[in-house]
Length: 349
Image (cartoon, rainbow, N blue to C red; front, top):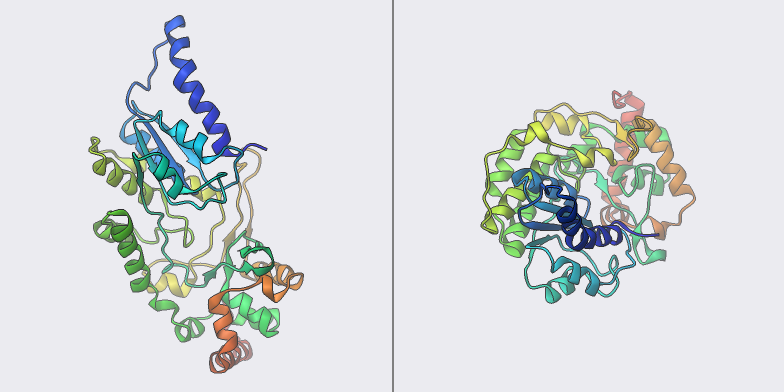
């Protein structure tokens, strides 16, 4: 089965070698007469590529999605990208393209400009990834893909009932676990990493994103205006013209098709926004169906089913493991669950 990168390589060579000749023979006018631009990266790369096309409608902009194993090797990918005027890439591991990742690509293709992936945990402090030690620490998938609740994973591994797990979703638990204190660390990590590793200062952009409210669908999926700002920064770095465009009018929210982890009500209130407990399933076939959501009880029940058929080694997470290993922390979380359940302090859905 061909990956998106494989298919894009074929399309790219066709567009580069064949299409101009056909247009010359038929007299067809090509609209994309500007620079050829390639964007390589994770699930955020489409949003960056789309924004670049909007910034320069005359450009040919292609996205190479490094999120699934390809048949192509790194040499073929580099040879293909060499036909572009500008190549922008996020970092990606060697596991997706045979023979190398972004480091090897940069070595083969000197004109590659690396740019950061946007990761920000402050709105979703309970979201964690569970890693499977029996499969080389690959992500364990649950009811909403790789996204898991640290509280749900702890509750299951500690032997709490579903009702007790449900009672953990309360402001007093979030306060005890420091869930309201993630902002500074998340901001520092994003700004420091972007500046030190990629030479990109996002401090002004972060202020503007925060003014617009919750700007992430999960810790790794930003809203489209965030990716538009990344594209603007990359254009400026490449000394390409950065026009004043009303991006919101033309925005395509590609990542909204994927899984969404809710901003819990107390967390949302902390940031002056409305929150909830609705977990969105992914849906990449909007023309066929509208998709589905899970309430908190449904999400917890579905998570427990996944955990029941898994070994503890398949549910590894440093935070959850730390809570379980710390007797005081573990006892406190269990006590709060049972006190909340007894007092009827259950989340309002």
